[in-house]
Image (cartoon, rainbow, N blue to C red; front, side, top):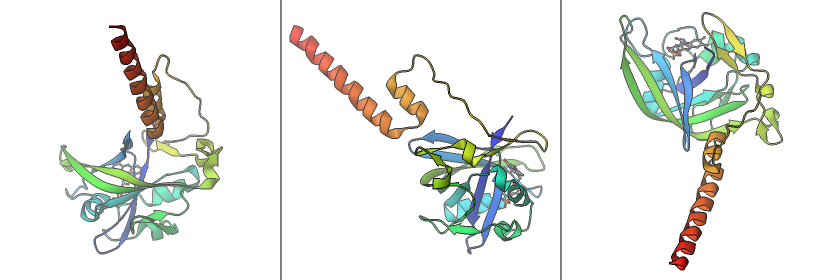
Length: 220
Ligand SMILES: Cc1cc2nc3c(=O)[nH]c(=O)nc-3n(C[C@H](O)[C@H](O)[C@H](O)COP(=O)(O)O)c2cc1C
């Protein structure tokens, strides 16, 4: 199955940058937006570096893994000793975060600054023994103007990669639209991920039901 990639940048407690891809990654909801990545433990039973850093500093950044950056994504997956800077190994320029001091991948067109929320630890079989699922709240979104068309993020310009089975990847180059039939306006706004529309549609429906109730009272 194609899975989106969480290209996660973090800092160690003593300020050493870290970057690694996680395809057991997804967004969880939209208001406020939460994301998660799931890290298998290392063979020695210890948590992966991204997990340690996110838990210790309370911060991480999600960077969009694009087709143009695919080789760099792969290089940053190599398991290297704690504290080694994968930005440097993959020859990636850093961009300072706006809200936090966590470095972001400058060449990635979409980035989320995330506040650590919690960890779910799932029991797993030896030798790993545990899976660490990190959940973070997105509190800052960066989108490059270069990947917008008419003010909306244009996936044909970002060309994200997804991880399939084995060593296979997919690249998203085209999309198609489908609207779910029969949805009311609030549900539709939620599906679009538009917090603003959910609020205005909810207010509109409440107003409508209040005025209908008023009409009924007048008729009593
Ligand atoms: C595309 C891609 C996706 C990956 N997804 C995961 C994943 O979901 N979970 C995981 O534990 N490791 C995953 N890995 C392996 C990690 O990236 C690798 O173990 C890395 O060294 C972890 O780095 P860290 O210890 O600095 O966090 C993936 C590797 C690649 C290339």
